Image 1 (cartoon, one colour):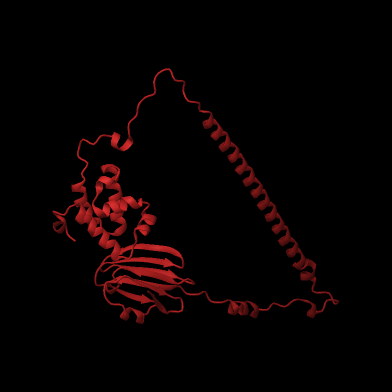
Image 2 (cartoon, rainbow, N blue to C red):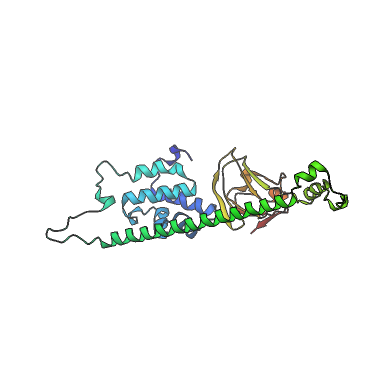
Length: 286
C-alpha cells in the first residue's frame, strides 16, 4: 500500500486496516498483547481509531509505532504521524509529569537504605571472591593430582637405561613384553557413530510478501514478514519445525532438499499451519 493510497484516510480507517491484517494472519488480540506488552484496551482503541482513550499523544504514538512494527505495516506510520503530530509546543510535563519542590523546613529524607544496599553488595562481592578462590584452589589441586598420576604411569612403563644399553636379561622372555596394536585405533574410529546431519527448511517468497511464525519444538525462533524475492532458512536436528504462514501461495518451500507434496494442496490466502517432521514428512494442522 503506497503513500498515495493512504492520503485522506482517518484514524478509524487506519485502525480497520490494522484489524483486518491481524485477523488475516490468524492473530488474536491476546496474542498481540502477549508479544508486544501493549495493554489490551490500547490495542482495541488503536483498531477502533479512538485515540482519545490512549494516555496522551506521546504514549499513543509509541504504542501505535510498536503495533505497526509487530504487525508488519510500517508504511502506515507516516499517515499516523501526520494525524497525531505533537507540534512544536509540546510541554515536557506531558512526558515527565510535573515537579513541585518540597516546602522549606522539612528534614531531608533518610538515606540509610542506600548504605544498607552498599553493605549487602560489599558482603556479596566478598563471598563471590572467596568462592572463586576455593574453586581455583580445587582446580590447581586436581591438576597436580593429574600430573602426579601421569608421572607415575610414565615411570612404571619406562624401560631402564641399562636394559637398553646392555640388552634384555636372559630371564625376560619376549612374550612378557606388550606389543603395539596398530589396528586398535582403526577399529575405534570405525565404531564412532556419524553425527546426525542438520535438517534445513528453506522458505522463499517467490510471488509476494508472506508473514511467518516459526517454532523449533516449543521455542519460537522467528516471526516476521518475508518480503518478495527474500529467502529464509531454518535448521534443526532432532526437533520438528512448526510454521504458520499468512500467505502460503506466495512462497516456495524446500524441506531437506525436496519440495513437499503438501505444498500443492494448500490454495488461497487462508492462514496455514504446517509441521515439518524430522523424518521428512509434512503435516497440516487445521
